[in-house]
Length: 94
Image 1 (cartoon, one colour):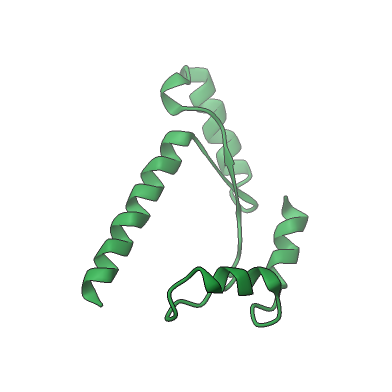
Image 2 (spheres, helix red, strand yellow):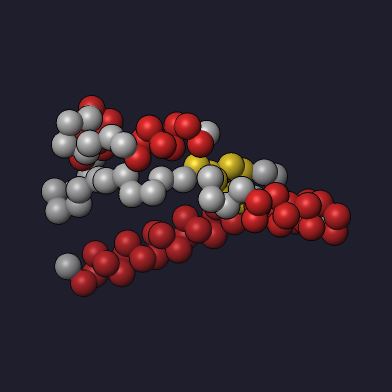
């Protein structure tokens, strides 16, 4: 994953097909860029962890935070809900 992220960071948004496709699906005033990209690794549901698993999960999460964002499915849902809320607020301002 680390090698992929390094390559993605070096892409020129004006000359890359990935960014062109992404731009076509975004509103005209939003331009896609890759700025310190990170991967996301989903590992189970947080309510299914016992105490030892929760402790191990936190250790692994901190150990690899410079490469990837390790989270549970529940964490991802909360993050997406926050993003949607922020975008709705932004649209109301425009």
